[in-house]
Image (cartoon, rainbow, N blue to C red; front, side, top):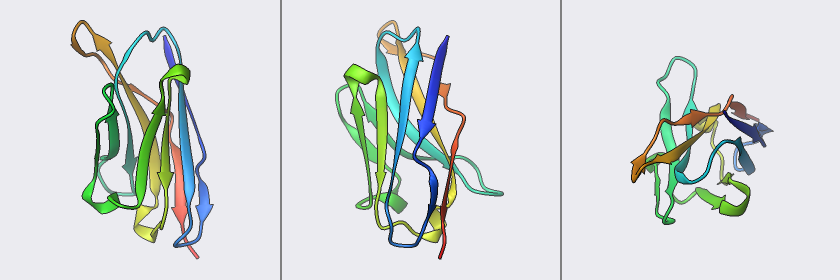
Length: 120
């Protein structure tokens, strides 16, 4: 069993910053990729950022230059530094971790979600 614990969400003014954290624990031996998704009211869940085992990253166009994803392999933790936040960044943010299964990706695990609200 794998558990993901997210933290760092909250209310912030436009232009502000937040840092999300997601720590994985349990029966997880090696991680293929880690990422952050978000879902705003009445919208589909979308990928925000992802980082693979080799360190390569990709970002949604809407957050490029403002958000940075990073990971601490020793702690099985992934972070999302969010700067220059905009009201349209308001959403529930979900952590996603994909373990290795053989030589490729396995079944993903999801965090419980953390609310990020950008408002004045």
